[in-house]
Length: 171
Image (cartoon, rainbow, N blue to C red; front, side):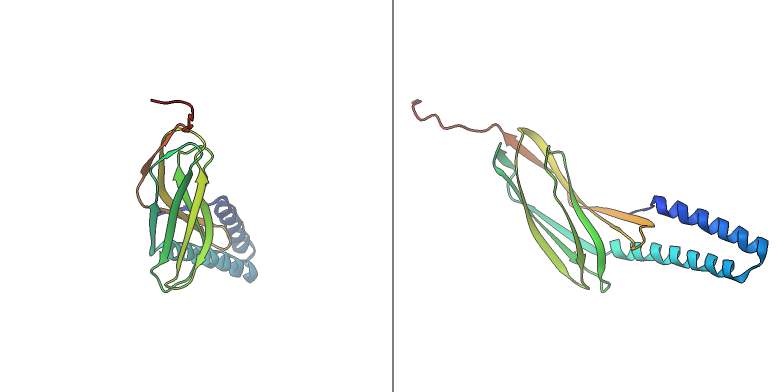
């Protein structure tokens, strides 16, 4: 699990420092309460992101490893929530070296929920490419923290040149 603050986190920390300095300088109770609220919201956001990225199971079924230019790249991705806590703001993206191929999905999972989808695209260029792993990422509702994990292994996909049928050519 990679957990990292976003740029909003640093803005909130600057706001917290300014609020604390103002509270200590003036002694006004409202600034102390505001500092407490900012601190609690930051901690709750961190816990939310951590719980949101944990206990997710991902399975990938890539159906074809050898194909020609113009044929379809076909795969099925299944994500299961193993927790009793619902997962929100989940983004699943396939990390690949295939030019022009993007496969990502934004979803939410209920408690012990399951989501599956099929992704297809045409192979546009010949060569040896890698597909996978799947990166699952999430953020809290305020966008203060971002967490991501990678699931699965990298598979090799070989795309051969397009094959043309020569009708008048006999061997």
